[in-house]
Image (cartoon, rainbow over all chains, first blue to last red; front, top):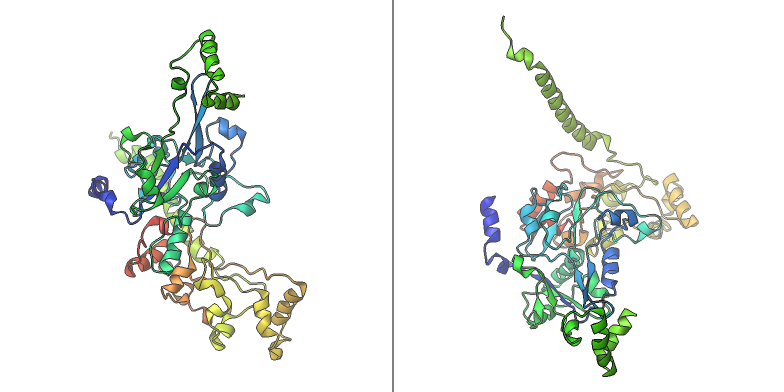
Amino acid sequence: MTDKLREYRADGYFAKFDYHWTMAIDLDRCTGCGACVVACQAENNLPIVGEKRVRQGREMKWLRVERYWDGDYPHARLNFIPILCQQCDKAPCEIACPVFATYHNQDGLNAQVYNRCIGTRTCAVYCPYEVRFFNWFTYTWDEPLEQQLNPDVTVREKGVMEKCTFCVQRINRAKDAARDEDRRVADGEVQPACAQSCPTDAIVFGDRNDSDSAVSRKMRDPRAYEVLKELNTAPSVIYLKNAREPLHAANGGGHHDDGAHAEAAEPHAAAGEPRMAEVESAVT
Amino acid sequence: MSISVFEAARPVFTGLLVAVMVVVGAFVGHWAHGAWLNDHTPVQPIEFSHEIHAGENEIPCQYCHTWADRSASAGVPSVETCVGCHKGLTEVRDKPEIEKLFGYWERGEGIPWVKVHDTPDFVHFRHKPHIRAGVECQTCHGPVEEMARVTRRVDINEDLRMPWCIDCHTEEQVANGRDCLTCHY
């Protein structure tokens, strides 16, 4: 067992992937509309847990759009970053699981096997991205909502952990279709629900092993970075940095107190700096 | 006067004995539930006989279960498929079971067949790759053409459980056949 784990953790192991599914999220394009969140919820049979459970921190959301404020109110700007399971190649959760319910498969996916999971929740503790969710209850769908459950996805029961799967049901379907024609899955053939629903095409999904794929090109972009890279988890989700100038720089730099701020902001507005105008309209 | 260790530890032994009995009982009960207490041969709304159709008349499986080589689900034929043949078969038209069939047909209802082979929600079995790989229907479903009423096999070693799947996937060297995500997602 230890030997297997050591082999698994060794450098170079991850070059062996057949496909290496990767997602690139362009934060410059992300408008924070939340379409991906809704699409994910619908595609993957995620329950609506209700207000009470959300307050208890038991929300189920494989994909969430986090907000970050840039600058101080009222001269502030909102930045968004969609956070989902990063499908880390060196995933902390995988070492944590005592029953190997989460493991890495040959396609570079961080798998979660519901029927093997015994619900220790250790993986959720180990996950630095906070993207694992535990079924505290067996959630049900009121009629007629159960009719819209996706038959390709398991309806999870009480006591198992779950997380983003990169819409593995769609990947499997595409691989199945490709196998019939005796070819590899083409670039753009698989689209997770979030990528499909994104109105600005901020989310791109594909095979990293194919150097011509859209996602590989995105990865070569100088704006590309990984979230919490310093933890050395080797995530499979690549973010493209928001290239807009930070707000405080546009403002003349630094933090202002209220009086000074009004004075400093006025000439900018008079000069008709478009960035400021954008901010004003966004705030009001 | 001596103190017996065994005397002192009697409650512990009793507790252990009860625990062992509970565990053994649970195993036996679970097995019995799987082997006998489940209905492996459910009564269907129409006493349809695969023995007559697939056995005596040698109708190929995929004549009715059309979708087996094209879809995840093999599909249950529509009432139209049944009536399509039986309209012309006047010699069996007045049999009571055929009367039932034409009853459904005239009322425009589907036949509420009872599922015999069912996998749990977390198992995604797809017929298509198996049929295309040349797996016989009988490999998993048993000799359906000899069954008057379809029954699911109950042999503990040959039951449709995960080891059964894995054994075949290993023997046939299915690509990624032992990856959990092939079936569980």
